[in-house]
Picture (cartoon, rainbow, N blue to C red):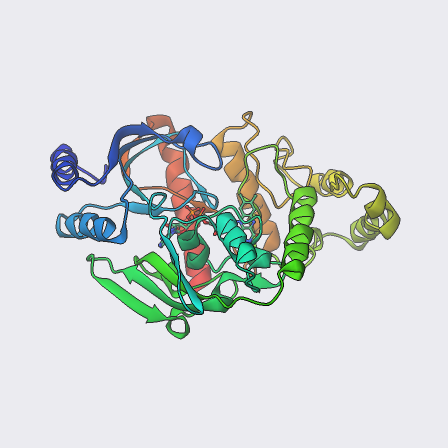
Length: 368
Ligand SMILES: Cc1cc2nc3c(=O)[nH]c(=O)nc-3n(C[C@H](O)[C@H](O)[C@H](O)COP(=O)(O)OP(=O)(O)OC[C@H]3O[C@@H](n4cnc5c(N)ncnc54)[C@H](O)[C@@H]3O)c2cc1C
């Protein structure tokens, strides 16, 4: 299995970072620092403190033809225990924030949840629905994160970013190609460094707080929070279970509707409001799944959990099976990070190739 970096490139990158006082960790075991609590050793884990440092590092890596992957808070990515990554750059230290007249500039590594708090105390409307999305500003803009009818793109004025070769640029919101869970950044190697949002104070913040509270409570009841997970695996704006069984027989569909009426009616919803779960529907639909030994979150089959009991193969088989059942209309939201590679455990190579193949097919489907 080929590596994406040579020992000489590792040594020269280290001395470059050292000479330029850009923070990094060597042979950093990232596993328990990721949202999903998976991931192997990272040969060089770079954590720049500002856009200028990030740009310097990127320029160096570009000129030296060294691959890297940028990460935010890892709340939408799956890193693999079996892969030793060569270079990851984390934006976690780029946390600047400054409020101007009618706008706020926020660094890519600032937390979305903290940003909602800043909006609350300044009485600014428009960010309430971002409550509880556990990513960074950069990761959020990358995929136009949102919930409850809100999208992060709505109040953007402009974005500063770094091109592949390290050059710093600014573009307006209109140039970003925002759509549902999409932005122009998703199909480029550009790195978002800072985002300017509209930030107009309203007279009273009572309604803002009420909405945030409502979304917070909703998330806490419907979202898996015990096991590590990455939110929804697939973005499906319809009845997820109905989509999964769309090709099943009429009698099975009938059974599904009966169970749904029994378990998801207003009375049962009220009784289970503090801890809603979809166990009954999961039980029914699991009968049609071949990977019956995989237990998803009891909150829903669209949430992949790391229960500590499953192999990467079992989890991946589950994702593929769901994907095949849903069909091409829906795409996988959680991103598998397959490189850049320093080393891969030999026994993982066949699965690595299969995941790679599968992702390439998905990318082709998406570009159609
Ligand atoms: C419990 C839970 C609930 C969730 N709920 C929601 C929800 O309601 N709505 C929703 O939209 N999402 C949701 N998510 C998914 C996730 O939180 C968002 O996608 C978030 O925006 C990811 O941000 P991140 O910083 O963690 O990015 P990461 O997971 O670290 O990275 C995701 C992608 O963004 C890229 N990226 C990160 N930073 C930058 C940057 N500065 N410039 C360019 N590219 C960058 C990475 O390269 C990677 O490809 C949820 C996740 C969890 C775990």
